Length: 223
Image 1: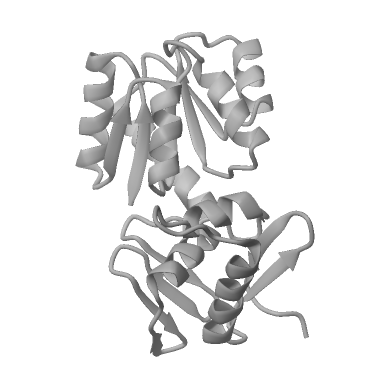
Image 2 (image 1 turned 180 degrees about the vertical axis):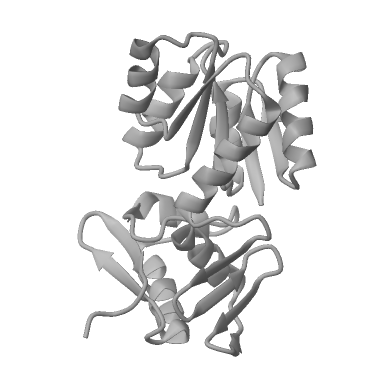
């Protein structure tokens, strides 16, 4: 499970990374909102820890842009400004949690764990949903006790949806997850991959197409 740390201060970033590593989290650190945007375009992350005081676009602006784009990535905002108005502003702009500096490493780790539990993430990289069990790190999937083989793109699609169970994943985000550098992906191709994944999952879960919006993974099909 990979976490994204967006922090320009080397000393603070080092403390965060050591705390996360001690709790068995793998983390990738960047120093700006622009670098964070590039990292998110290239890789899937389970959670982002974002400092407010970044060079260029600040952390709250970055969170707002994430939410405006439809990204559901859980976010923990760090800031030296800790008034009630600051907390309200962070949460209103789309942050999932708020931690004032200076903070204790144990609290940082506990808040990350809480956010991951809420979003369906787990420390061992295994997500369990009704009759489905997915080892995202090992790329293994079981429906009931039967193992199901997926293609690379089917894994990318399932990973994208599993991290946002019950939430609408915009079509653009799904296309981004499935895209490859040497091949353009059309909307029809996306729907074809969704259909094939549906067939492999059977009635264990439901992938719903929401016209004009995107896709949503639900626990089970309605009767």
